[in-house]
Image 1 (cartoon, rainbow, N blue to C red):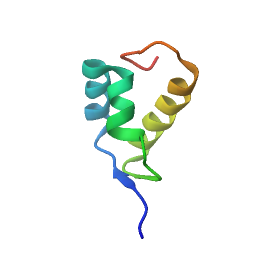
Image 2: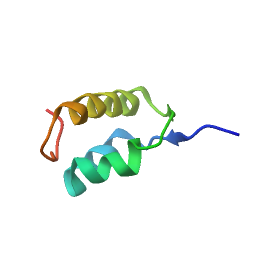
Image 3: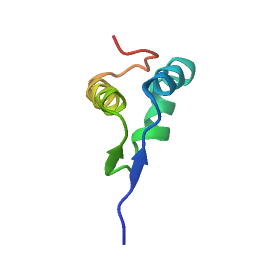
Image 4: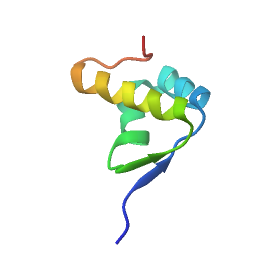
Length: 65
């Protein structure tokens, strides 16, 4: 049995997806049920910052500040 990993796209793709679809869709597309992330340092940092904010926010958001 393996684990669920995500090959993260470039940061520009992640930023565009978040701005277009919002935090809830972003979470379900890129974060939910993932156990490991593979990709560039910038993409992985972006996903980490997203997860921190997603856990704190109660309202959907469309950009990381």
